[in-house]
Figure 1 (cartoon, one colour):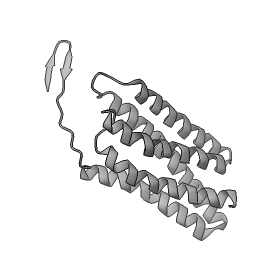
Figure 2: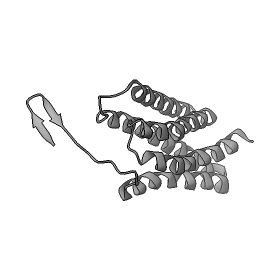
Figure 3: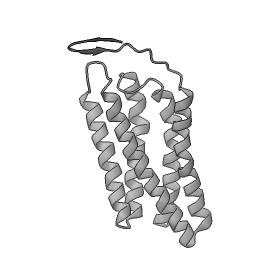
Length: 164
């Protein structure tokens, strides 16, 4: 790191391998999705409803968090934040917040649809963004394995809530 009166220059090496801490904090938050979907299907009734609601709220929290991750990495993007980074962050945030509002107003099917869309965007866009230097390189390997766990769990809840 080099600092002068105008600012700071940071040189970093980025591995394509997923760091162990990113494995823990990448896959760990997917466990409540899996447990919540299984619990909602197995428990049914009031306890199943509570489990489904908590899983939806968890999904909202994680999607909102991931919108912040996208904004955070934009601060360290070579040449500054890109328009795509900002638009992606805003899209993820709006989807997460809209899903939270839908859940708050008892619209679980809408909330789940918005969450599936948001997580679907991450699964598609993060590997592309990794190649463009807009997110860490390891996102190209992590996201296609990590995010489908959330999507499949949310889809299972959607089929339950929509009565499919």
